[in-house]
Image (cartoon, rainbow, N blue to C red; front, side, top):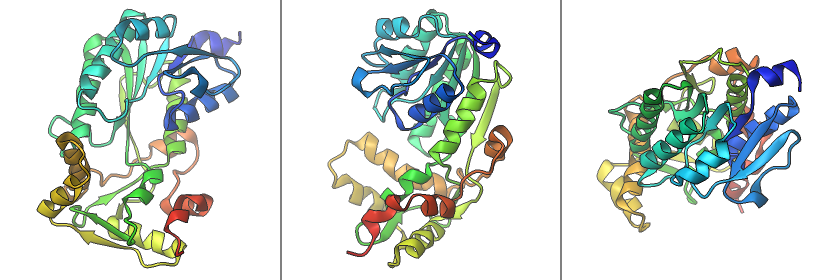
Amino acid sequence: MGIQEAALGLIGNTDASGQVGRRVAQRLARQGLRQRLLVQDRSQAPELPQSEVATISGYGDTESMRKAVAGVDTLLLVPIKEHPERVRLHQTAIDAAVAAGVRRIVYSSFLAAAPDATFTFARHHYATEQHIRSTGVAFTFLRGSAFLEVLRWIIGDDGVIRGPAGDGRLAPVARDDLAEVAAAVLTADGAHDGQTYAVTGPESLSLQQLAEAFALVTGRPISYVDEPLEQAWASRRTSGAPDWQVEAWVTTYLQIANGELDLISDTVPRLTGHPAMSLAGYLAAHPESYQHLLPS
C-alpha cells in the first residue's frame, strides 16, 4: 500500500454503474487507489484494478447500505434516480453510512440547491445537504449545473425546444468535468472539507443559443419557443407521468427563466488544471450525440 493510499483510506462510490460514478471510479483506478464500488446489480459493476464490489438493494435499505460501506473512509454519494421519496431515501443511506463509520461524504448536488429553489429537485438536493451537515461528518458538496450530455433530449423531433424558460441562461457542464472535480476532491484527504462548489461549464447560454449550436452541427433548422406556462403543464401531462414528475419537468425550465442557473464558476479549471468543456467543444468531440437529430 502506497503512502497516498494509506492516508486516504478506502473510498466508496454509490454510483459505480452510473454515468458520473463510473467516470469517477475509472479515474481513481488509474491512480491506483483502493475503492469499493456499490451497485445493485453486480454484473453492471466496472472491472477495475484495486476495486472491490459490494451490492446494495437500494438507498432505503439501512442494513444493506451499512454492510456495503463498512470500512469505507470517504464516500461519494450520488443521488438516486428521480423518486417521490428521494429525500427520505437519501437520508436513510446517509444515516447508514455514518453508523458504519464513514467519516467524509462528497455529495453530488445541484447548482441551484436551496430551500426555496424553483426546481423541485433542487429543493431535494438542499434537504439532502442539510441532513449530511446534521450528522457531523466532514463533507463537500459539488453543485453541478445541467449536463451537456442531456441537452440533446430537450429538442423535439420537429427540431424545436419548447419550455417556459424565457430569456434565461445556463452554463451546462460535461459529466467528465464533474467526475474529474469529484476525483480531485476525493483524493485531497480532507483539503476540501466544509466546501460547497458550483461546478459549471465555461459559458452561460440561452436556449436560443443552444438551439443555434445544434443547428450548426446538424445542418437543419432548430429553434427555441418560449412556451406559455399553462401550455407547458398541459403538454407534459399528456405523457401520463405522475404530477411530481411533471412538476419537475416544468420547473426545470422555470429555474432557467428565474436566473438560478445563470452562473459561471472556475471550479473545473481550478481543481482539474484544464478548462471546462464548452458546448461547441462537446459537440465537436461527440458527433454521436446529435445523430438522431440529423436530416433523414
